[in-house]
Structure formats: C-alpha cells, structure tokens
Amino acid sequence: MRIILFTGKGGVGKTTMAAATALRASQLGHRTVVLSTDAAHSLADSFDLPLGPEPAPIVANLWGQETDVYYNLEKYWGKVQQWLRALLSWRGLDELAADEVATLPGMDELSNLLWINDHYDSGRYDVIIVDCAPTGETLKLLSFPDIAGWWVDKILPVHRRLVRVIRPMVRPFSDIPLPTDEVYGVGKDLFRRLEELRALLSSVDETSVRLVLNPEKMVIKEAQRTFTYLNLYGYATDAVICNRLIPAEVEDRYFQGWKTAQEQYLRLIQECFSPLPLFTAPLMEQEVVGLEMLEQVGAALYDQKDPTQLFFRGPVQEVTSEDGRYVLTIALPFVSKEQLSLMRQGDELIISVGSFKRSIILPRILHGLSTLGAKFEGSKLRIAFGEASQEEDSP
Image 1 (cartoon, rainbow, N blue to C red):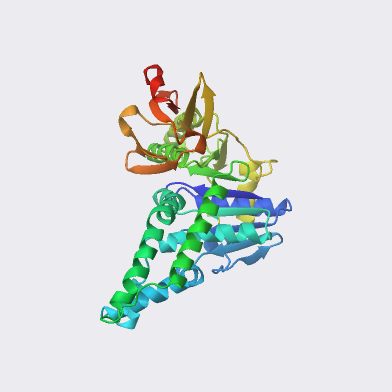
Image 2: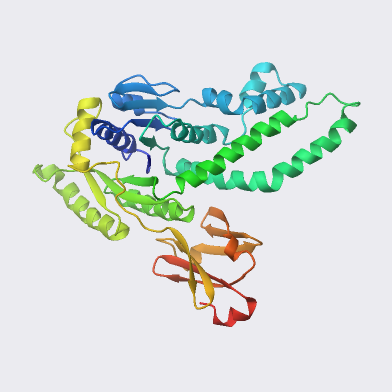
C-alpha cells in the first residue's frame, strides 16, 4: 500500500500533478484512488468528469472522489451533530440555523482525512493519492491527529465523568440536552481512528508527501516553510515537483526573461531541497484538462519511473544512544535558533516554530530522564536526555 499526499501553495498545479500521477499509476496496473480534500474542489475539472462524495470509476484501475462536508459529517459525526442540534434548538435557534451551526470548527477538514483510513482498511486499492488543500489548510489537517490524541487522553475522560455526575442533579430543574454515553462513544471512536491515521501518515514505508511548486521566489519560500513544518509533525517528503517550466525550445524573445529567472530558481530549488529528488513538468501548450493531457503530463513528469515508488527515504525523527545519554533528533530545515522554542511537560515535548506548535509524546525510554540540553547540527535539532547529574555534559 502506498499513500501519496500532494500539497503546495494555491495555484501551483498540485491537483494536476496528483491527477496525472494517479492516471499513470493506474496505467501501470496499480489499483488507484485519488481524492480531493480541498473545500474548493478541482479534481473533477482536471479529469473533465463528474465526481462525487464516494469513489467513482474513471478508467481501468482508477477511481476518483471529491469529499463532501455534509456527507462526511453525517457519516462520521452523526450522533454528535444530533446532540449539538438539540442543544442549539434548546437555546432558541430555529431548526435550519441549528443544523448549520452544529458543526464544530475543523470537523469538515477532519472528516476528509478519515477517508484515508477507510480506503486503507478496505483493501480495494494499492495506491491512495490525496490532492490536499493549499499549504496552510493542509498543515492544519495534518496536525489534527496530534490534537485529537491530547483531547482523548486529557479532556474527554474528565468531561465524561463530570457529565455523569451533574446529569442527575440537572435533570429535575432543566431539560437541557446533555451528551449521552453514545455521543461520547462516537467521539472516542473518532479520536481512536485519528490516532490510527497519525500512525499511518507517519509510516515512512507507506506514506510520503510531494511538494509542488513553481519556479518563483514567493512559491519557493512557501515550500521551504511547508517542508519545515512537515518535518516538525513527523511526515516524510519523498520528492519535490517543479511545475510549469518553460521548455528550452521556446525561443520567443518575450519569454527570455522568464526563462532566465526560471533557470536561476530551478538551481535554487535543487540547492534548497537536496537530497530530495526533483521532478519537473513543462508549461504545456494548452490547458491540462482531460485524460489525454494528464497522460502527457504524467509521461513528462516521471518518464519511465513508477510514480508509486518511494523516491527518497530518510529518518525525520529518531532516538539514538550516545555516551550514556539518549539523543532525540528531529530534522528542521530552514529554521533559525531564534524561531524555535522548546518546553517539556512530563512526557510531552512541546516544539514551537513560528506560529506552528507540535506536542510530541516522548518514547517510553525517555519518560523518566531529564532534558539535558538542545542544539542545532546542520538542519537537525538534537535534544539530549539523561540523568540530572549528566547536565553539565549536555550538548
């Protein structure tokens, strides 16, 4: 099983790259499903075929899907939404307004992610290709499993016990609808599935992200930040795709300035993202819509290579034993010391890079050890753990 996520700044052509990759994979005999998690879907437009909230056949070995928020919410959050509707109606909202408001922030994005679980567990596909939302939304999606784990461990059990205590006291005086055990059960099951998804997306043998960009300064900067945050959350990137390169045979004087700039930026991309492999796709002569044009893009992008292979493998996060201490190493490219902050709370290590924050549950082997120090080596953050008496020798 392979799971490949395509992301990048809005407008760089990630939907086209995802669709072309899926089509080429299917032509090589891989049973492939490609789904869009972007609220503003364009996957159906790319194939020039109608797609719905469930996978639909496109060609042999290829299925496509555009997730639908209301369909997903009913599928995954039905019981929770019923309680929210009842609560909002009790507060005086009419039924239609209550139905619209009864969507917790992030529920729609979260439910899109759960389709990956479903497709993985079904065994119907060899390859799952995800056309993700633009970068910011993608990173928010990928952070959900971490947040969910914190809720299910810290908040949900306390809240459930509290409701059980107050329900008998409230019932004689108010008809306010309190969440039932069934509602909590649905919530806990969803959080459990998100934990499974987190493990799945973090599996370097099965899952990788492909960064799509154009040879433009602002787009490259955005891709660098994305690469940093993907490493922060523990997701492996196996390739960078540079889209819309002006072909060498184009000699019109109007394009010479653009070609020169693109050549410079292409060298910059190679330097910035090395040792990740770089794939390129040309600026096509016409709009990339339909199977014929997608097939041309796939052939130009991958040549004779199988697009489902893992093009780069490297540890994003690892624990090693060094001189009687343990060292947790996390790859954080394009980060300066000033952008980074660390905090330890029991078995949690909280790493902040700019406005993004990740809470890492430390491996069991590090639980009882003190944090001795941290430093950068190249593009990697190394955090040392050991007995408190070793602190003076910290890196």
